[in-house]
Length: 301
Image 1 (cartoon, rainbow, N blue to C red):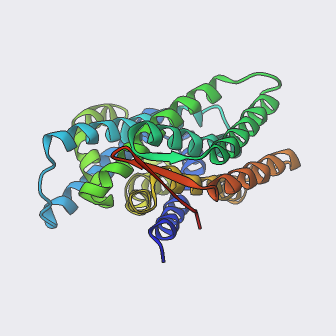
Image 2: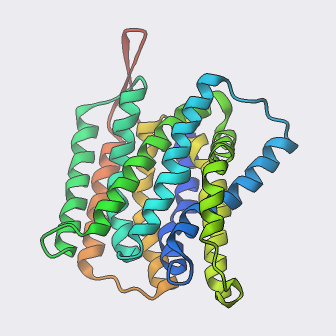
């Protein structure tokens, strides 16, 4: 099995673990302060992450690695959780799940800027086509214009793309699970106080289902999902493996229907299927790599 195929399989496991993030967030925000949901999950995840690092006696990152870890923390520990939670106050999980279809393109673009990965024109044409479809869906759902929630969600995706790309590259040096654990620990001094200040005063009156959603966000979405995701990005390449995230809207939509009772119309399904098909085609395009001034090509699986 090639590293590209292994990376895609690990990436799919990460996507499956991520996929319930928006429905769980949408379920929690009516009962818990959005700031607590967005940052409190990182605080709880950091406690487990720090314990793992101590028990397994992981060496401290170098100064250069610490700088990259700060970027990862800004993207996937603080930026995306906080902004996506804010977006879910006004958007449905189904709508947000389909809009997230643009995230693989963003991640691939950041990866190209930071690494030697060079997707070919066919890859970019397919990814851009999928992104335009996502934008068209947002305009259609917003009756001809973007809503403020869409703008916030796009900001969340930009930060996530940055965190994914840097984290995937850094995972080649530190290991996939170590990257997210160190990022969570580094962010803890900045996430702890805001989370405590927005902890619900009458926490015992919060329904257990809302706390379960919060636990999923902290333990699975914010921590263990990244173990699979970062390993996949490191093995198969950030640009290519990031495209497996096109499957996330499907799982998110299914989760929103069964967990939240949201309705899905034929337009949403059509856009989701079309976007997924287009990006799958792009993911099978030739991928080139430039190393030390020399170019080489390889075919995707």
